[in-house]
Amino acid sequence: MKDAMTSTYSFGEIKRRGLMLVLSSPSGAGKTTISRAILQSDPNVNMSISCTTRKKRPGEVAGVDYHFTSQEDFNLMINRGQFLEYAQVFGNMYGTPKEPVDLTLHAGGDVLFDIDWQGTQQLKEKAREDLVSVFILPPSSKELERRLIARAQDEDAEIKSRMAKAADEMSHWAEYDYVIVNNDISESVAKVRSILESERLKRRRQEGLSDFVKRLQDGL
Ligand code: 5GP
Image (tube, rainbow, N blue to C red; front, top):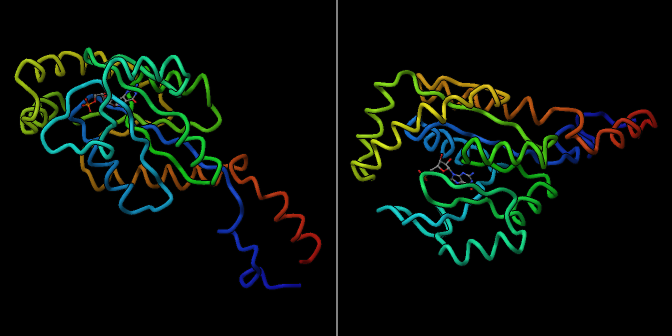
């Protein structure tokens, strides 16, 4: 019998289905920073790039931060069924293109989504088994406001409107699998990483397990 440590069927090679990791929060709670840290440190995680009809902000890159689309093109994509989910947020349309997500999950890669509660509800209906949802809360409303103002890319009126809507967004915390209060970025990143690690070990996601165990039983 082969030593399990030297066998080609080591644990890390068991075929698995990817998962959909959703991070939601009111803007300014630190979600983007956490997402970037996860993406940089884990090559198995791929960011879902949404389409949006909102205007590009300074510093944003088309095709990296978002696919910036016209309302007409967005409607076309809706009619063709090309979105996994879509919603209106702050008066603009946002949607997740379906095809790249399907391909990544099937290949065993994980997909990270920065989407709001409306999108998360739609994913829950369509893909509950693949979904792992995390809600990020700011440590205080003062800190939330400070972060929004420090960001200063949005116009004054938009900051005010986002502060007003943060309270509404936060009312959806109980619809998520996990909730993290973002007191400290590196601690929050570590928490998201541990969620990811545990969820990857869920039996149903390890599609190659029965084959692996059969080989173990057969002494291969
Ligand atoms: P922002 O305009 O600040 O980039 O994003 C505004 C809000 O839209 C954020 O809460 C973000 O999570 C959400 N959002 C971004 N992309 C999508 C998407 O594809 N679907 C949904 N439902 N929400 C999105």
